[in-house]
Length: 143
Figure 1: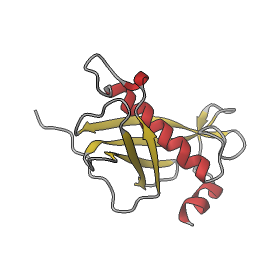
Figure 2: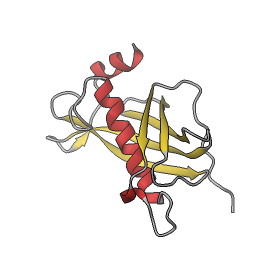
Figure 3: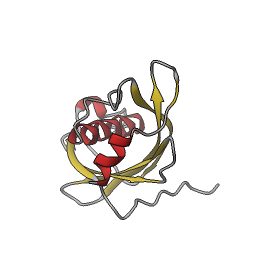
Figure 4: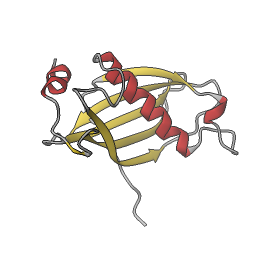
């Protein structure tokens, strides 16, 4: 069976650091696969906050976003107390969204822990339907 491959883009838009918590560990005593998605979400929210947005629901009026798909390639283990450097990159823009990539790297060892991707689609929570990317959002990420 062929393995999933994700190639992290060349241009990083944002970087943050997160420390592995006890709640992130699974029965193998390393970061669980589900926790990688949670760490990616935290990095995504910090990225949006760096642009001046409160969260994933506050881009423009009632426009927020939904995660349409997610993929993760696991590279190495991470343990309690490890500091992960998480880089965020954006690609494949269309009228309604884009792909957001995440590279999680162990700060001490430099090893990649995981590469992830989420498909981001903007959504009008009042109308309950897909929405175009807010112009203000595009302006902020281009600057």
